[in-house]
Length: 254
Image (cartoon, rainbow, N blue to C red; front, side, top):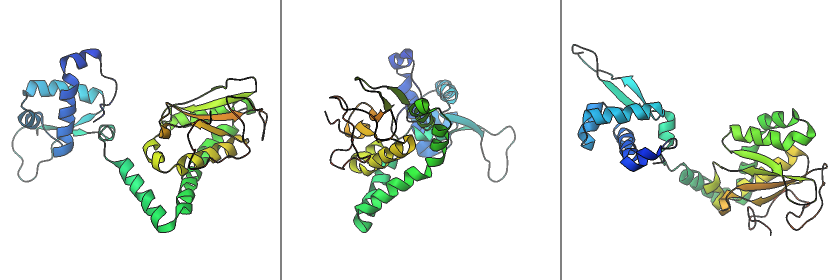
């Protein structure tokens, strides 16, 4: 499990983070649970469990609910149970990457690689409107930055910066990619995204690096000066095509 949020140093020193992970995992495995249930399953005191549950609730990993009672209701208030929130469930590896890769492999085997390409382009087209609106609302010189901001809203942690070298160019950097693991096997996802960026920004672009190929960041070279703009240097040679071959997608050409 990946713990939601950054753990303070004292948590790591005292072992509280692993204990909270165990509590969250127990709720995932057994469903909504009372503090008493968790204490019994994990061999902890109820006071310790409640303290960890309070911390998990603050991190929005779990939430308290009223326990459902089936049949005759006894006197007194029902026990409070704790359930995982959506973000708490997302913190566990639920093999979504594996499922997505298997689905794309089945598409490739039954309908061919062209169908995978069509899926990748359709995926980008489904997101086109909001990105296009953000880019077109910006001044021409600010469009790469506008695209970076729109990508960041969707979790790509994107930034735009000037590219090194004498020519007028920018680098669009994505520090996170939700489909990086799947793109390792299906570079068509990266190719479709590169084509989409080119169409959106109105110029050819070149993918210099990707997380899918083990680079630290996805980096896209964006020349300024309109379609076909930019000059050649040793760091980022402009190209006349927007797509990247399956054998080289994501690799720095240098």
